Amino acid sequence: MNFDLSEENVQVKNMARKFAEKEIIPHVKSYEDHGKFPKDILQKMGQAGMFGACFPERYGGSELGFLNFAIIAEEISRAHPAFGYAFNMQAMTCPLTILNWGTEEQIENYVPRLIAADYIGMFALTESGGGSDAAGSMKTTARLKGEGYELNGSKMFITFANEADVGVLFAKTDTAAGVKGITAFIIETDRPGFDAKPIEISSLGHMMRSCEVFLDQYRIPIQNRLGQEGEGFKIAMNALDYGRLSVAARLVGIAQGCIDAAIQYCNERVVGGRRIGEYQMIQHLIADMVVETEAARMLVYKSAYLKDKGEAATRESAHAKYYAAEVATKVSRSAFEIFGGYALTDEYPILKYLSYANMLHVGEGSANVQRILIAQDALGWKNANRHHINRKFSLKSDL
Ligand SMILES: Cc1cc2nc3c(=O)[nH]c(=O)nc-3n(C[C@H](O)[C@H](O)[C@H](O)COP(=O)(O)OP(=O)(O)OC[C@H]3O[C@@H](n4cnc5c(N)ncnc54)[C@H](O)[C@@H]3O)c2cc1C
Image (cartoon, rainbow, N blue to C red):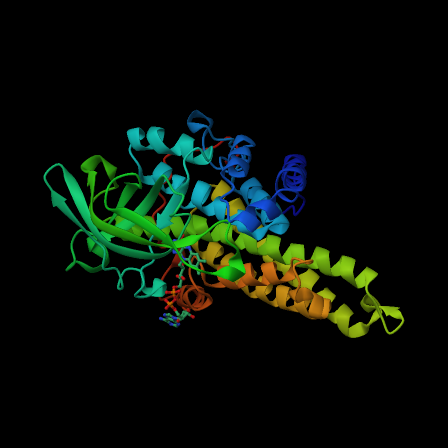
């Protein structure tokens, strides 16, 4: 067993940190102030191979693998948590799902453009009836009519939907068949009947939005179905295995961002004649922040390592997502305490980290949903790693 990052991993980490320092941090305030979607920055991230890390070169990928992907997602989220969204929409849940389940024509049409961020992607599963019961609450329907499907219904909290060109969306083709009645589709947003309205979540800023999506007699050809009719739930759960790795890495980045900011503040802020880092109660907070974040990082690396070996790693992705969410919310709360009243000011990033940690605690399956999955697996009632792996490709980095 070797816990060292390889020379390549270290180079990738340094590359991502330098990219964030040069291409994100100096420019982001202007995008936030104007509520402007930073497509040009995402395209630069695409050109740097960040979204293509887990994709074969023949589809424009950089073949860096899942561990490098997790390292990049952590570094970029540490710099600015909003940019972490793109690792789901431009890499894991949208294009990787098309790569895993699509036809050759679908892959060629969408994947290279999505990982280059020339197309903006989305993943539309959640509905207003409850994201924790995605299948049971699904009311959106897709009916076969002539040469295509007609979709009607709505989706909730769909990130990037107001900017997206394409997305993977789930609808019921058979409302009486439970999870077996769900089918996946590749949605093109420029067709009539598609609308997206941003939801006001001011704590997350106005640059990258999550939206309510409306489908009103929205028609697409049969060729836009992803997989077979009735395979949608399996496809969604498989996509979440990858999405959870990304979210867990993003949460570790948020926790690390809080630690770095808090350490600097502890060494600078003098109260009662002493740097606040000299107070033992502050040191207790710092110690827990450092150790728990490192433990979460190890769970992320394990999940990524197994995915690089070609395993779905459903169990390990749930472990990583659950624990990283607990840690990031606790660590950002501790940073909040360390910064005192200044945590609330725009001068420091603490409130932003805390808001994104809270959001990711829920997103890609809430803490309770992860607990249910983890406990049922541990109790031997359900094998979490039973999920079908539909990987039709291999990367150079595969072990
Ligand atoms: C900013 C943001 C962006 C998002 N982006 C996307 C996206 O791009 N695409 C997408 O498809 N979805 C997206 N989501 C949706 C997200 O995945 C859901 O919010 C999440 O799955 C939880 O669903 P819910 O909010 O409806 O909570 P609910 O399902 O209503 O749950 C409420 C509470 O009840 C608990 N609960 C529910 N069922 C149980 C149970 N059986 N046992 C114990 N406790 C339970 C939950 O853990 C939670 O604490 C996003 C959400 C947010 C906030």
